[in-house]
Length: 412
Image (cartoon, rainbow, N blue to C red; front, side):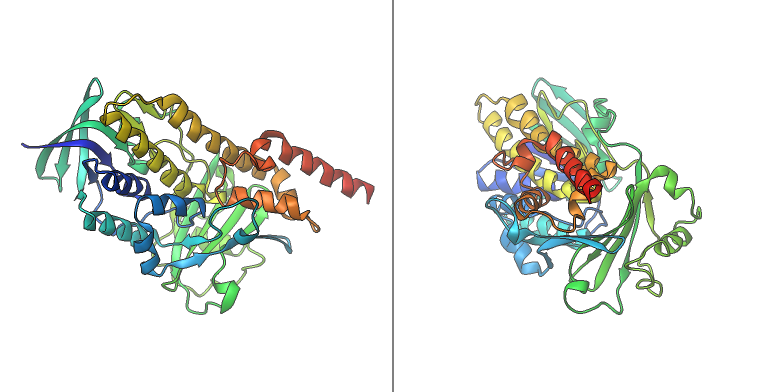
């Protein structure tokens, strides 16, 4: 069996793992990456948030992404029964990036992985983790490469960015009940043959069918578009058991987009993911940290997945660097509590979306500029900025404003 040594082993070559690898390489920390899949490979999570731009830049990945020519994302639009709530990131509260990208993840993740390899970090593709043994903070990880070659990797620390593979969460029995429950999703891609010019063919749009059900349209720069539905598990039972037939039936439920995609061919049979949310009992332990979807996934409504993946990847790498250098690290305060502060904001927004309270704010006919700017900053991923009242007071402010809207309607 081939044996390797590294300071930090990163499991997973998605955005979280690549941000971690880029940061560590930049700061002279030895690391290597193992990835179960061969790239390019399909992944969901195609809508980025401006906050992630800071993380890509810190990890030395931004120039490579810029050069790839992905579709720029300047905001998002929400449509429900003829009402429109549109958010422009350049009009958000506070500082920070005012644009990002919407990306086919197979291409995007390959760009990140290629850049990390160009920087000198070794990535083992087709590498499945079969077992991890911990000896205090140190570990020995057994890897099977392409089902034939066994490798043993000794590491001082592990960053688990394995996403839905959830390597350490599964092995160490860390999975627990998610914060958001009861939702499923179905999605596919199309080659859009009659895409409109301008905003209609560039802007990410969410069409809301009812309080619990919504549809996404994400156009990419390569001419393909991502389409998907999210709703309670029960809603999906009203359609065919054949995913392709069911998706065609669901498209007929749309109002704004009705008919637009009827003649388009699916690039792959629609994929259905039941119970899409994930959670863990803890995000770190002796000798490891969990990042991105390997730790927690809330719901796709506000595209928070990659934002949390890159933020947690960068934060874990920053602390892991200090740990392998022999410095004291407070993982509870500087990682778990820090990440949970942001997750708490977004999870509350997700919950209030499905109660309908947040939808009242989005679709109010005359929204206050100040409130819209503050909400827009949250949608841009700046969920750690406590100078923003819609971050600092997130647990009550949405309910309070929704109550005022209800009162306005009663008075009218």
